[in-house]
Image: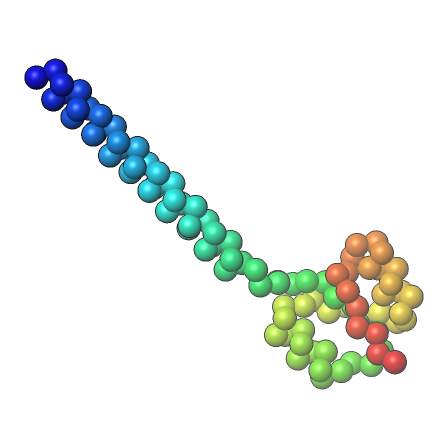
Length: 92
């Protein structure tokens, strides 16, 4: 009788442990899936020099860029060095 009780306790522990592992895997999968959904850039600061271009406006709306106009290439470069921009489009 004692062996049957010990065997039943062992089976219960294994089932509970497997259930906890399954729950942990489900939470990990949920975290990974939700993290991949947020990889779209939003309101990224991006500098533009020169006259307004319809190409730049189209890319900005599709890529989630927050455009800021700068009077010259050096001003845009200086802003990028200060960390205010992720990049700049310099028209010739």
